[in-house]
Image (cartoon, rainbow, N blue to C red):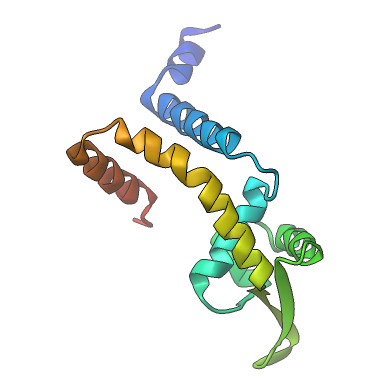
Length: 144
């Protein structure tokens, strides 16, 4: 392995990504009830946070994926009973996607399963460290 490759694999960005992946894998593993894949959960969370039905193009933008990928995800979520498609009252060619009660329940169940592991990890930190961690993660995930 060249020095350039070794440096790339050992920099802060690589460590950051690896630690985030490790944490998320651990949280998923601890709460693995098999009800939602990470991609399905993310789709449902985006719709839930919107608070209103969304067009597929808006879902694609929010998820940062190609519109054709959203179609596949929505098809699966609809087959699972987690979303339903509705006519768009402003454009008869378009459809809106909204959560069903079953979709809301699936998100809730996932969070109920995941929360204890997240809370236990946060308990390892002092209140000040938790506040700082959440502040820094918010800064890293904000659009700017």
